[in-house]
Image (cartoon, rainbow over all chains, first blue to last red; front, side, top):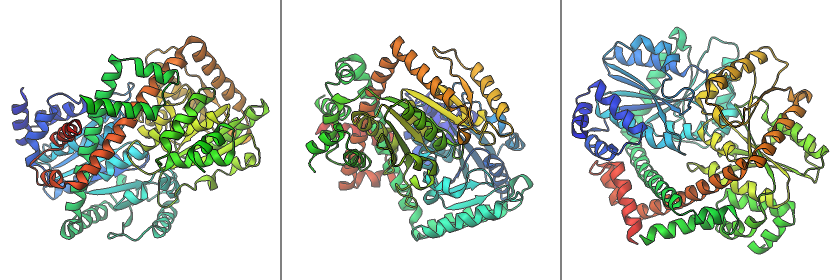
Length: 312
Length: 312
């Protein structure tokens, strides 16, 4: 399949083409530039929703229930589970997303785990393009689920229209979440597993921490849900819609999208630059020797790399 | 204080100079290049140890106990707690590191929380320079503790001589750790809070997962400890020493350090490039308009940024 066919397949919403295009993103394949150019004019329609939270809070279960609601409203839905690469698990992480299996035979649902090949900022660079592929393929609602609660995961979630942070009793408290820089990136909070002891305390502590923060245009709601029993999920869906409708009406969504496209282009260019610099260093070990033997420090070496890039 | 004085202060091991130099790294201050050049020849002596794990597993308690052991061996010890920035907590995260307070009056111990100002890969870029400052200041053992279990935190831990991954019963299982890409970055595993139910199961599951991985030169041990009772920590210390002594003897440490210096220089150069590109885009909104109105896709925009960088 050549790239033009792949683009046509994605735009026609063909599952196999979509899967192949996302693999091209994972692999940072050479055809990515042409693919990106081909689909980009057809993007921007989907509502994108980030789901972030510590392992075990029930993000996948919540995603599964939100997909169910979206389908009931006759919306096509996709779930992109973004995981860092591990040689132990590879890209095959869907096995544990058992509840997602309910949707596996629904042609209006696309579920995909995505791993990136481990360079710094890999997820943050790869996820937006994968989301655009799903957008161009006609999915109305795209959930981006991240694993982990580090800065990179927060960055991935922040690159969606509506960032949902999921917590659960006993799975790291609000103070821990604040440390991960997650509070200010969120548009909607969900205290999941709300039937467990301690859920009201998690919500209370979270509200107190939010109260300490700077005032914002949108006051992120703190909702209680028990996704495994489908309780409270309609309210989560309503809050996501309300956030997005408000951001669309105020122009905040347009501004946010423009800003993140610029950041993405800058980061892509920087990453390309980094790869070029690494290749140049491989062919000329002098700078590595100088670094290792402490004749030049890393900052000066970086300056030298920038200087060389300008020179040719 | 000018930069030459600051460098002299760091090399003399003056606490105030060390603190100020690390603040310069946090702020990405203009004097950083000169500071880095000044201290770099005096680095490379310290043993650096990463401590990574989910919130609540007891990393700080373990660090405190390891510092106690290092001090008993008459080694100067530093703890660098690397946190992502949050406007709610700022850089002042030491409040919860209560057990560290035992060491607060010991002149042979330096404890510091470090926050970076939130750009992608910020921690990974800033932490190594802060470690070098502590190294140049004469600390023999430097612990780098990270918050969160995402890719960025793994990258920070991997930039030490010996990466210790800390787990605890009920705080995310081995499968979750594998997803965060953490297993293959570790040299020593500690199942902390070993007096709790389920600790042997965590160790067992972890050993099984490690067994599935590729064979390595160093077989990472899985140790049990209860840091709060100072149980098993001597064994952790011994394993760290054994790993480092082995890596030093085999030449693996030298190779690892060289490789990470090269990666650091590449990443620093790429980050500088990114900042330049962002500044250029601020002064010329055309590319932003083209992106927002879908006349150019992010990959093509990145190419254009690289092209412009070569042109001037």
